[in-house]
Length: 298
Image (cartoon, rainbow, N blue to C red; front, side, top):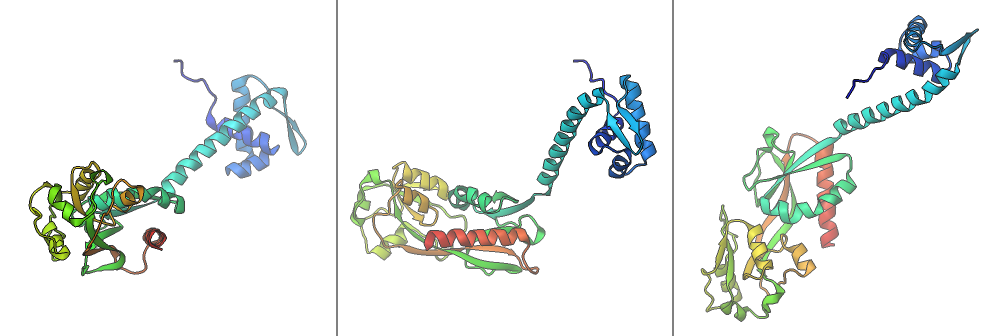
């Protein structure tokens, strides 16, 4: 491909401005140069093209026929340059916010609601950081995080979001109706990395339900809630799962909660650095989360 043969950009800019403003002086003011510099650039362009572009008259200039042919093309070109540059600058000016949460909460609760955040706050780019290990918010690894537990969280503002509860859930294809049916069905277990006092277990659930004769230690085991949820949806057994994580699956009918009781879990909290008023990014994230939860629970 042959390289483009074009006159100097400065000469083209000077001509476009002078033609648009019908004045060498006003073109000079717009481009922050002298009228003499504009005249020089246009003379260079005329020499390059071998034609006259302006009829010089007292206190005004008029475009020649060749200039009238050239001007609209340059005007559209410079307008396109300006629009593209403005779009790139606006893109760079967009503000990003990073929210950290556990892998399961990110996959099952946050990801399905990301579009709602974009619609409410189009000026922000939301980055989801999925990790089961707490990130150092004070070091700036993320702007905010959703932590599961009862705290305390030193140096962080803690805003309660969702009180979690656990209950048996399964695919409706299993036809589970009464707690006694669990004796004949495989159980699905989640092995928690950091067990605590309220860590749910089938043994604890059966004790709460007063149910005996269930092989509470048998069945499939998973190290991640998301995998246990997918196994339950696939009909591979009955899982004791967080109702907040499977809320969408229950609403869609992929899973059912056939009976109680439920077990108390901990709380999902929004936390961020306690170093003064929150940034606009953190405030937007906080307000969006509270609105989402209020809309779903109200």
